[in-house]
Image (cartoon, rainbow, N blue to C red; front, side):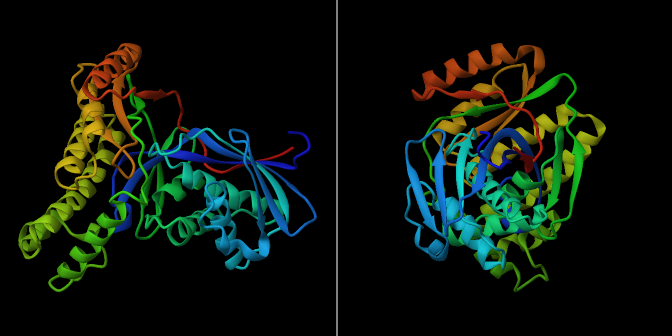
Length: 371
């Protein structure tokens, strides 16, 4: 890659706990992965961004003056959206050649889109000689996901992709963007990521529908309570005022309230080194995602059940937007291979799909290397 000037990366992510509460102003516990999107970039002296991929034969050229016109591209739309939002924020886009290499599996719930958006903006900023403000990059990447790609997401994915730290989870308040880092110390246990391999697409799934449901629930509750987001609703307030909500919305809000409390308890568990408590919280999170938020589905449920049925696993749940994607499981480190084999076979028997497991570590977010 000597002919390129910079190598810029941004990370995929897991979310230990705190699912579907980022857009409700909640606190979440993500971590950046060593699965990344890497951008090799060099100036080309034109008014164009030339895109190539290591994994695709496609080549795409984006006109810097017409970045708004590429929403329907099969490949390159996320890069175009990211560049457009950066440009609209007043930043100079320099004509360049970009080679993109993504090791975050697409459609896995590990935020390949956030990794692509964040790394693209970071690469453009680096080429223009700008200092990197990782939080600002995350916010512009989120804007690209919402306004260009059409997924009405919260800030968690892009923030984790940009701001992750090796061997640490983030405790991120999605309302204020206040973030603290906690060492991820799991004792004799490790996190195992499994992909159910059922294709899913957040734009076409019910993700945006859940956003609308929580927005509607907030409007109803604000007639009774002085709250600016659903995550501010305490369990006692929910007990008192939940009855004003239609049944379906009440179930959705119950997930938000209980999941917010699980994040609080998970912080205490990590600080105390109590992996058993953390495992129980993962299990109850999945049950709530399945029963109250209804974003799991047959395949993720079967994958979680296969994991939870083993004594070496003390907790397992779906992560990401749902309707497919990945699970994380808290597994005894010396039993990981047996865990994978049992889970693979039980899941294949239940669904006909072949689960995939990822060997990855908790890593840094944005990195920049001059070549």
